[in-house]
Amino acid sequence: MAVRDYTQAFRRYLVIVVIAALILTAAAVGLAFALLNPTPPRTVAMATDPEGSISAELGKRYQEILARSGIELRLVPSVGAVENVTRLLDPKSGISVGIIPSGIINQQQSTKLVSLGTLFYEPLWPFLHATQRAIKHESLRGMRISIGPEGSGTHALAVELLARIGIIGHNATLLTLTPEVAAEKLLHNEIDAVALLAAWESPVVRQLVSARDITLVSIPRADAFVALYPFLSKVVLRAGVGDMVNN
Image (cartoon, rainbow, N blue to C red; front, top):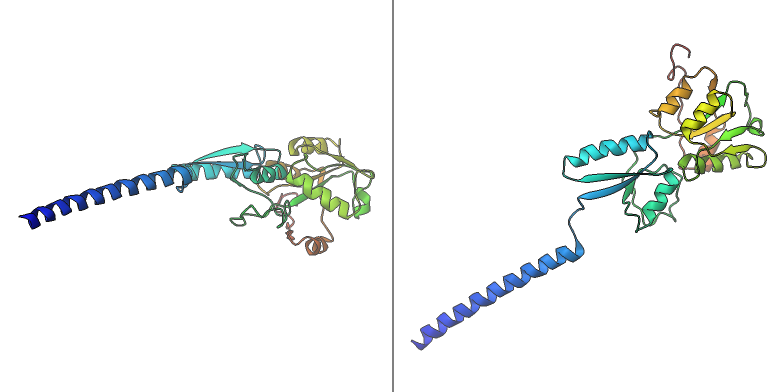
């Protein structure tokens, strides 16, 4: 009898120990989930360029796709790519993803960022009013040139490339206009040139490419720019793509 009682008592003790261990394990797992939050977030904030831009439109598409999986994508518009990078680097901004053009930030500045891949070409479009004839870069001196708002990718890239060919603030009027305002002023000959970093699908690009009084300037030393700036690529726009009727 003593042996049987001892065996039963031991079994009861073992069951209690196992139950206690399971409770402690469950509590530890729950605490780990609460503190470490290892599950993917259900709400993600994405930095985009202003409304009407290609990144804003892509953001809306991603929003629809992620919603199918129960993930809310919150779109946060800004002035442009430079401001988007600033937000991505700021842990307090709440921004965790954004579409950024190449050349806005270098490898040393982006150690806290991870690239998920390349999406599309985003050309830098140089448009001139038809009254201007810029055959060489020296012809840009004295012109009124819109280079985009400060904080935008257009502004950052245009300032860098114009300075490379000697076009800076004291020998040209560099204007920080939005793409829409710049296009209207160029069409009405109120400014001489517009630099615009945007995808082909951009409404402003399509408007200016097909406008009669506007010239899309060819870059004769495009290969030199690519050699100097490895993040650039040369893209050829064939005659007639913008308007086959008017070539």
